[in-house]
Amino acid sequence: MAVTESAPATAPTRPPVPEPDATEAEIAAERTGDREPAEPAEPAEQAGKPAGKPAAATRRGYGTVAGGGYEAILRRQAQRESSARTYARSLPIVPVRARGLTIEGADGRRYLDCLSGAGTLALGHNHPVVLEAIHRVLDSGAPLHVLDLATPVKDAFTSELFATLPPELAADARVQFCGPAGTDAVEAALKLVRTATGRRGLFAFTGAYHGMTAGALAVSGGAEDVRVTRLPYPQSYRCPFGVGGERGAELSARWTETLLDDPKSGVAAPAGLIVEAVQGEGGVLPAPDAWMRRVRSITARHSIPLVVDEVQTGVGRTGAFWAVEHSGVVPDVMVLSKAIGGSLPLAVIVYRSGLDAWEPGAHAGTFRGNQLAMAAGTATLTYVRENRLAERAATLGARMLGRLQGLQAAHPCVGDVRGRGLMIGVELVDPEAAAPDDPVPPAAPALARAVRRECLARGLIVELGGRHSAVVRLLPPLTLTDEQATAVLDRFADALAAAERAHRPGPPAPHRTAPGPSH
Image (cartoon, rainbow, N blue to C red):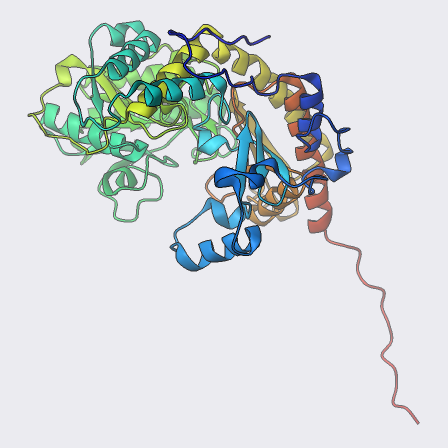
């Protein structure tokens, strides 16, 4: 499907930025790791290696690399930054320039980015409509920091956001602008439902990830100080009930219902139930649509607000504008961040007006009025909606899933391939270590790390997720072309084969007789 750029609402104040990936030469170059369209495309075996010229971004502005080169930058980062840093450990690159799917490092190497800021970059890096929206605000003289005051930029963002929401929610919604991170929006949602219901307890699911602040961590799957009732999240491959499919999902819903209906369950009605329509960090696990509808029915019957975390799944990522639309569920609260800011920090919750029981200032944040993020977000939401990128993600994602599933026959280490839209996961396993009484082999995190390394060596950026960090995740931008998708899958298949060969046990060494004593 051809994607066309929508016209800006007002005349641009700067020359338009070139459309990313606009020419066949650039597409061919991007497939092979090169981004200099005037040069012949690099052969596939050179992907991820230095281009013949120094990186363009190292020659000017913030792309200038001084003080010992990019290796020195990486050393200084390791010395100065905390041990909590994450992506920098597995991706030892120094990005200096980016456009569309491509990141260019300070060393001149070019990478296809299938991490996309952990799902933040719906339109890829530096999309023209996003840059133009930011430039318009900067050139207008509008204030950049306004706390929670009304501005034309904020009004435009709110109007566009409401235009994308499920109509039943949009017709009776309130929006709370939060501190500019998804985890603060989760905190706001939990605070909201506790205030509105007067109850304290919460229901959450195994494998969940909702953020890194205290309340968000408490409802995530890795919580250690458990004060939340944990429910089984349905999944077919590693079903908690050992049956999978529709039956496994039915048992999961029945467990939830039983806890609420049984007067001796020891579990009081909670203030809310929080769920991801697709668990991302949990291993790319799409919730079955029928199960989502059942959960909505259970929560409605018990007057429990349903909170859906759409931080990573929103804005077309799963093949619908919001992941809840696959099931037709209308939640009471939606938690939104990442892509809604068009690559800049922004987070909100949208909820039914009947829950709006807060006192003034009950939830606040100094940076909740990020004008640049709102402008970039409006441009992104509009572009995704007008160009039907959610539908495009559904079509292209299905094709990518099909090809990845085709790898399973040749690679026994591929245990499962799953996902929705352009939110895809490949779970790697150790088939040699399978237990006789368990048809599902154990996860293979070491192999997954090796695949990630081999992908990076071939100019492909991916990350890991899942319970044991054994799920290779693909989160490409929604602007991904067919040619780019092929390049991504080619590099992944090559990396998988290389990692598998390296991890495959070799033949036993030939028996040698120890030499006798010399004379």
